[in-house]
Image 1 (cartoon, helix red, strand yellow):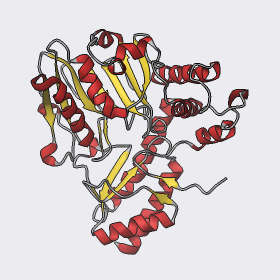
Image 2: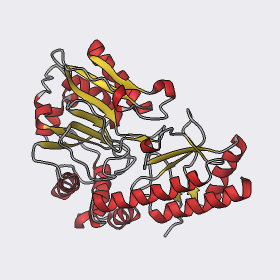
Image 3: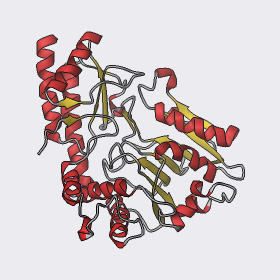
Length: 366
């Protein structure tokens, strides 16, 4: 096997090795077709089996009730930022947005272009540079809100909703691009969930959208271009146009691997162990590794941000880690420091390797 590094990039991110090895084995002759899955018509039975399995595995792993539809679309979360208000904010409907970071703010700005004054801010921690989530007392939701939008995990700032926000029983619309399937959760409060695959699910080019039937009925948008209508994608089973076939195939491989591990309960146990190891090291050396997030209860188990005492030490940390086979540790450009992305594909042993490196680094430089 070719040399493999430990991949801590925030996205596109690492993929489980068994999912890649399966693709390698099947690349030139998929399902006895004599072709790659990238070459087969999206109407062919060989591809259709992959498509249906990806949808079924999504339903199974998330324990989705029958009244939820699963879509596999293109355009990433960015297109969903616009599609959601275009479909759901019709007839004067209003929505409230909770702003907790870079991507939550982008979603709000796109919705504002569509909904204008009908799109409101329920809470924001921008004045704190998004270094924590809003407290329950800071969230103000209108009685007339059709839904409340929030981002479940903030990849840039390293915060995550471990308990979903209290919004007075209003339905959630949620961007779960960076933590969908990190643990089991009850989908019942959610009217719509969307997730770009390239962080925790698969390669770039696919976005999973899960929409409840009552929200689908709200999508009376006949004046929209066809591709922007959720109802059309549901009617056509995500085959309205040529789908990103290879991306969906890799997504299927990842979901099948997730199932083989024991599903989301087993994945959650691994993710919590990784968090204990990494945050344990940061807290042991709090004078050297300084976390970005102000509230420990708001720390993400997908993206961990911290700073070293100087820019020189930060550069040395990144450079030495790379020499030791660990990449993707440089912090986001607007924040700096170090960012460790520990999505599902990152193993407990990978994090142990990083923590051993961090212990040695602080011993040498602290």
